[in-house]
Image (cartoon, one colour):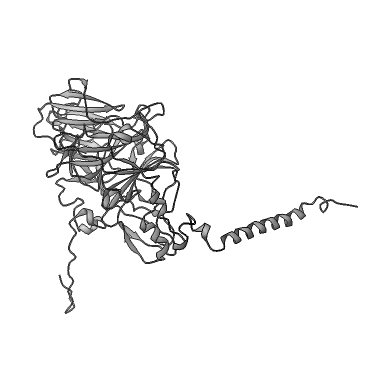
Length: 525
């Protein structure tokens, strides 16, 4: 393309091709809302009541439960909220399926290689607190001679509360190298928020298919059936899951930001109806209830929906689309400004959990320390690097691992970049966190950690006692390195200055005592 002015030519900007090396999704210059290798079609919009049909005309017009459904289908409803819940929180979906889910051969117990713990009460001896800062190197992928699908590859790290009382949260990692052949998963305890870290996933749900890649998240509501399979060309996959009990994931309020920003509703993608080609095959539906596995055996695929409509529908979101906000004048913005999704607690002022994004963005501020200040937040924080350098608590923090600080645990950055920030005195805008992405799950709850997280995974290492961390703090000059562990104590004249402050306070105290002398306050005739 060229300009109408002679001698002036505009060269088109070539689109980026690697989603892990872009500043924002728009660098891909896609006219579609999906990445290039995503094979599926979606419907968009968070909070909508969606509808979809494999065969047009399947959905009944003007009603939900006709006396006879078209094509010999059965009406089946799934409710998420109480029947009489207020309209803005009422959630349900109507399904029109070949065979009702109630047609099965009963439940049975199954054995699994997974490590599932869901009782995070202090009376459970299997879980303990980690009062120190902790870090995990990458969680181990399955060995080549093992066949580990999602059911067997799920491992609980920590949590708080109990699904039996519909209140709390649990964090997991998954490591898999096999598909869920003729096997489906149904979490009856809570909602899963799954974040892919390594390997592409081909996910089938009752409502249709989704394609998930590192840097994307997938949310599936409790009671919805799904299968996690490896996409073509993927030999193994790893990622993180946050489960909430008694709450649901929703978009945070924007307040003064206005109507747009952070994760925008139009960027959340929902599947369209899909039905298996061969329905008459044996299927096992693994159910997690109160943290325990059982299975339903049946001779029919659960993926037999010809049509559906409602708002209990799984969805996905590409984290590279996050519209970040930040300070453009002074001071570091609290991490809450990077909230993608939030789950409410029973305290209206404190969320149960926030799912946060830390990806490429501009850093613009003047005359201020722009990195996070040292802090003792009330929340528990679990960080995970999806790709790139990550934002863990040591230089060895790698994608596929994790990092943790409990509530009120003192922490902050000790990296070389953190130290240098005190010295560069630079006000120029700069791009930060390029070619990387880190997520954080922040909760108001105190996390209790499973034996798998503490010992079984074999990747836990404490970062709270490493002497090299503290030694990175800058000193006043090289000559006083052995004299003090902070700059303040060795600041020139600091002792004399402190003594003067002490003397001034003593003198002020004496001056004020004059006005409290009972003699000068007594009235005499």
